[in-house]
Length: 206
Image 1 (tube, rainbow, N blue to C red):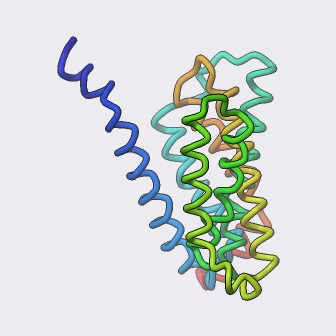
Image 2 (cartoon, one colour):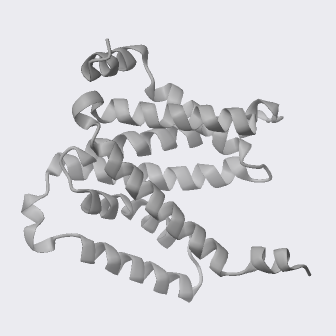
């Protein structure tokens, strides 16, 4: 076994990648929130998905995949869940602080984990994750949380769970090209001509 194989199989690798993903996502959300006054949460969602899909389409070229009708359906549902997750999360950020929105959104994958777990150790990790959510939520000041924003965050959590579920189905036996295809579907779903026009007009570009 080579040193590369040992590194690839190290349990620290997925942990480090998870931490990098968490920092990247939350930092991106914090920066994106500063653009709400110019293009709104819908515009930010559409722009973020559009830029990401363009990069992934160029690099991964998902049109080379040979897909069955069932696989196409799963990818479409995967993309729809991805788009809904992004849009609803940014809608929540209009009125709910980032930390609280993330905590509420995480209820989706947490519920999915509870439904799909079988081993006792899994439930121990789920309990720790649930405790983390409780720590983040201001339970004593719960009345101060905007209800509409909280509903958007919970909706984003539902889409997150669907994103995981359909992502597993769509990606079974396939590579990262599936993610690129789903990203493009999500971007097309949000990037309506009227939305783009309104975002450009609001930004003062036109």
